[in-house]
Image (cartoon, rainbow, N blue to C red; front, side):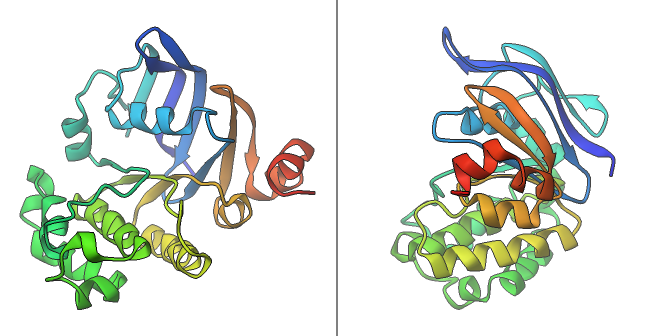
Length: 237
């Protein structure tokens, strides 16, 4: 598969604190790419930098062959790079449908809002059932579905999923993982950071392991599952 999103020698952090150290990463077009690592390894910093919420201190980010590292986050969204952040961050006092429609504010997505809304409700029937309900009254799993749906409303080409099952009950986490391959079938490319390493490597074609802001090892899903450092650290083998 060709790469739709690439980072080269990417450096980023917060103020004078450097978190990412010359990270190289490629997201395959039409596939699922995983980023693994313990808490504090730099996964969220990487995602926020790719999305434009954090400025790159050095290095390059290319999307569809064009540099985007200097573009603001809203322009990256318009081009098709969309982040579903850790912690869901829905608007609690707004209805499910209002939350979803907010996702389609960019110019490219606005004209297709109604059609995309139907697609989201088909993917997430529970949201359809609760479209008039305040988002803050949903369960954690339902709010994660809402966050995913809101990301889809922006018509992404690349969806950055930062810890989509964090804090969810096992049955709801299982449902989220069952939905992710359906997103690829819609034509999306996915970069996912996730603590459930076993499930992630089962669905990802390729993955990277971050340690202290650097890529420690990379490979296909099966290769990483058999890598001693990965199996011992994350799979308990």
